[in-house]
Length: 419
Image (tube, helix red, strand yellow):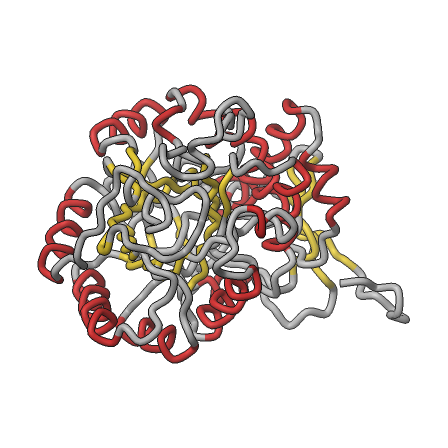
């Protein structure tokens, strides 16, 4: 927020959090007993989590400063995005360690519960009825089939289960919506977090999903407002923002990101991040996808113009910038992982990604199998984030390495976590 019109800005004071001196916070929980040392967790609810830090002005570590802001300009984000790669990754990795435990990565599984037959014209999508692709429309899955798939995902280590349907909006699909509410209740009852991506939602539908136990709702913006009409014409950017607002108002966590490889310019990637970073509340999760081009779609059939030439450096640059401008947001390394080596994926984790989709399919496109991701986690020393538990406190914060500048006179107390 600008201070130009304020007569007396509050004076920042520097405080350092010392883990050894902290008393237990009532919402903190001890880590699972299979860890070598006890670790503290933040509250699972993002609102409660953010309230703990409401008196923070900024954080610094190793000469790098970071803060949660909602007044970013495009030029500011562009200057971060265009940093020399080695500087950008160092800065983002340092910011990541100020706010997160880099060893903890959330594992999510995405299932298409209604495939194909969508009337929209998203020019990258294999499920649109406007294009001839390998995807054939299939009926909505039965509730029991979905619950069995969720159990398999849970057994494989996933802790969030996301269900996607190929349609523009729920609209008047009352019968299908009743079944989806039953699916949400069932998956939630299994101890998994539940996410849905069902197109546009109105306020009442969002409220019902929340009451059924929905954890998060995914509704991507895809790209910048300027480039969006070149990719999709059947749903406006404002439609998408309204659905995000309905989800937020219902108290559901927002999952919202975009896709690289839609023929966008770097300024469009910056523009997408600018929209996300200037929302009244940052999304709790921002998925960064690389286009998996599909033959038969307009983007999949455009040969020779490198429309889908997204490499690991593009992905890492986008992830790193998202990490810096939205430091408390979970950044998800999403579609396209199958084309990246383990070393390239590690670079993206270093850039600040702390969530992935696992399982062999992302709706209709291929994804690394559970066993491959388990081997990757072992190789990199990662651990999965448990369902319905808040993130681990950052080791740099717990060890007193992070310098926290606070606003003098704030009513918020000092952060205290369980040892």
